[in-house]
Structure formats: C-alpha cells, structure tokens
Length: 143
Image (cartoon, rainbow, N blue to C red; front, top):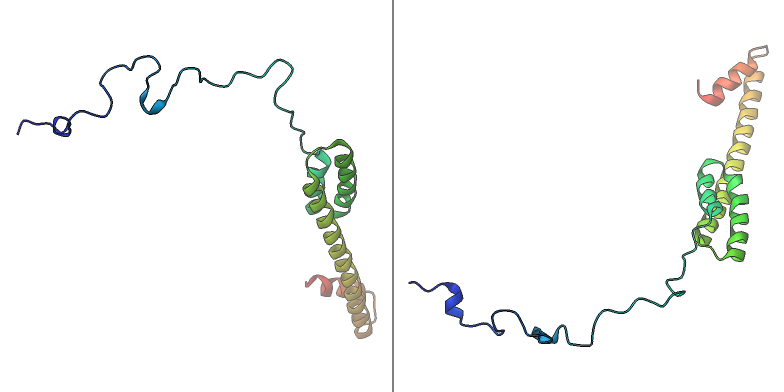
C-alpha cells in the first residue's frame, strides 16, 4: 500500500494555503471586529486600596502578646471604617483571638497562683523551716 493516512481521508473542510482577507475558518477574524481599544486618557482601572497594616499586626500580636492585639484590632477597625482599606476580617480576627488568649492567660495565672499557694501551704505545714519556699517551687515546677 502506497497510500498515506492523509491521502486516504480526502481533502479537509478548509482549502489549503492562506485564507483570503476576512475569510478565516469558523468566522474568526471577521472584518470590523478587533480587540477593544484602550480606555480614554484619565480613565482606567480603579486603584486597589491595600490591607491595613494595623489589621495585620493585630492578628500577628494575637499569638505573640494578646493584650496588644486587642488594642491594635480596635484601632485598625476604626481606621478601616474611615479610610475604606481592606483588612476588616483580619482586624476582627486579631481582636477576637487577642481577647480569647488574654482570658486564657489570666485564667492560667490565677490557677497557677492558687496551686502555688496550696503547695506552699502544704509544704510549710509538713516542714517548718527555711526550705519551705524551695520545696513549694520544686513542687510547682515538678522538679
């Protein structure tokens, strides 16, 4: 067989060679239809407002030092409300995380103080002497 696969299928739906002007296959490239012209001078895409820096810092400080995150979150929300910047969700998340972590930190300190006082009192009742504070500290820290 000397027939190649191209010859066995016959001619294609489009003529071979370059197309005449304005006669592209499937109606592509019709005359009069080109790309959109550029916008007139003075018009263009609106500028994007950036994300508020205090909102970003509020979320970061929620995990570093939570009380600062509360203050930064409140200030960022005020700035965003007046300037129209982005970052309202970041500021709210930083403020809420700051509140939650601050409450947890206060609870942890209260529990630690009560436990330290209880262990200190228990050790001082068992051993009267100068080493009671040392034993209380060792009991608290698990040493």
